[in-house]
Length: 380
Ligand SMILES: [Mg+2]
Image: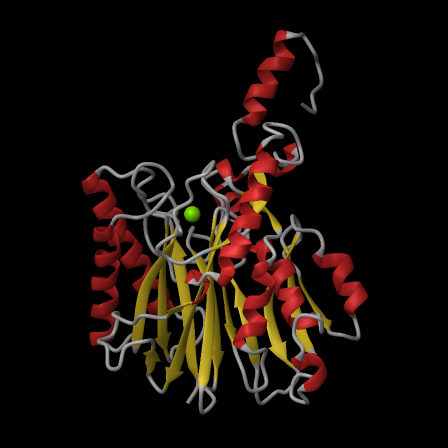
């Protein structure tokens, strides 16, 4: 029996800045998803969050892009928006860019990562939720995981991983999906994926057809959807682990290095990816640094399995991998990098280049500066 794991997420309001949602918003989303389990639209779920983003993780049998599942998530975000409005929270309903649901949340504001597969006897999943950055934040970590034998030793010593993986890359500029077979096409792949503005990883597949999909990343570009700046498209990635896929430890290892990613304050800066627990995922230093949380759970039949023995749908407690002190080492490095980068203030490359800020208000400022000085250039 094939199942589909969906994480649909959005920022629909936060307490005092872009830090965290109110508990009433989480509970409102949970009520909608609980109703969907009773109507058998989804089998199981949990709601989590990173920074100001609410994540709805749902297990069902409706496949990817299923209208009823996307509508459930849309209704949950609407319910969370109503809570935000009643509490007067900041940026209530920010990621809901349309008034009415029209078949699929893609292009309507929320981010989506989904994968459909036949579960193995034991099916471990790791979910990576990020805040204050964009989908390309996963370009380096996922390349390390699926293409670097110095990270994933299974690529060398496990016959089930030895042939490598197939990686799908989305060209955000042209809308094309490019496929790379690794390691044979590694150098072609790196020539493309190093561009963190234009390209981002969409999906990863095992070369063993029986195993199928390995990982999936949300690739919506919120700012391009909206046509003006409405917040960075804080991404999510999900990956299957063990027995033919990278081990959990191989999935987590790259996050010990706080790679620089686009995002941070006003979605207009460059900062290190800071690994932390859900409880610590409150971006406070210059609205950052960009956060990454990793949650682990199992899929057994129609159920998600976390740390507790027999929880009701919605009450699962996944393993919070970055809670531990090991990743305190990465957090220290991240804060050293973050404070160093902030010394550059408004100068590149702490601030992103202008073309990557085109949906912010910088253009209006520049226009006034040029007009005041009588500089005439129709391209400005
Ligand atoms: Mg956010």
